[in-house]
Length: 243
Ligand SMILES: [Fe+2]
Image (cartoon, rainbow, N blue to C red; front, top):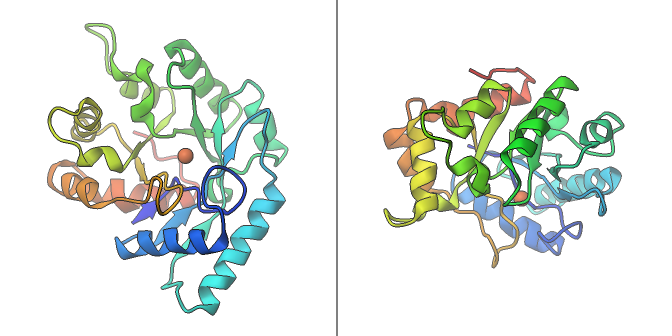
């Protein structure tokens, strides 16, 4: 399984604070069946991350895992999770923002209350600049939760504009009365989800959780394999596979 959203690079954002915590997080993911993790430290326009530092720490992490005999064949890739801003595409082109695993795919987030118009414009702008936007934890944005009566869902509208959808794994553990959980499950049933990510931060804060998501997807998704593995493999081959 692929975890395309994580904060495992230590000391660069509000995720892992040390190499030990990073290793703990990676081990927790591996134990649940993950084989590939994309590291996606936050990038904010007024608090940009340093791509060289990310790459150096990713390498240090890989080395440490190998030396401690803990790597279990895990593959780690660099990336960023970017809070949308108007010149994001330029910063991707200049190399200041890391796309996912050196592909044309980029993980973009918004403020929870961001308007539908802004989200739509962001997708179009990134696409026009040749990038493939993946909406990070897409269940979080109020503007995407409901569409005006008679219109297609916001996810399917975004997909038709060239966006990919990533959901978090943890809401799948919620029950029927949890509206976020219901929303995520409906999106899976409607085949409007391309990727999953744990968005793991620290072993004691947002640890990775997979069981409920995997169980649900294996039972209810049309193509569980695509969601858990194949789409991410296609992304890593830089294939533009949107349907
Ligand atoms: Fe995140």
